[in-house]
Amino acid sequence: MKLKRITYSKLNFRQKEAFNFQKVAGLLADYGFNCLKLADDWQGADFLAYHKDGNHTLKVQLKSRLTIDKRY
Image 1 (tube, rainbow, N blue to C red):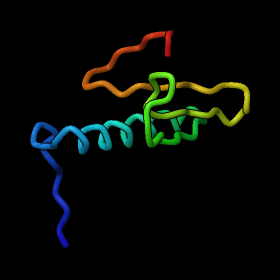
Image 2: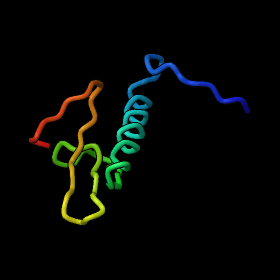
Image 3: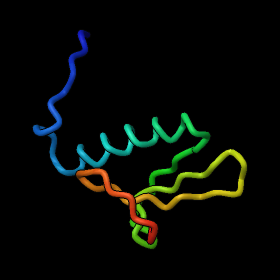
Image 4: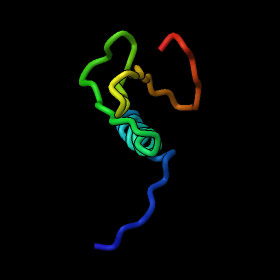
């Protein structure tokens, strides 16, 4: 099987959300976070990112563009 890059704009909504989760989770892993995708939104979060120190948890909501908002 030969793999080829996908075209993001051709993905449906669920595929884009899964794609975005994987990209962000990979970046957060570089900073010591373990990410858990939630089956249903919880307090507005799509996934939780737990830091290896056990003292920091981020509630993350996925959007189609990068936004950082402290309410999450």
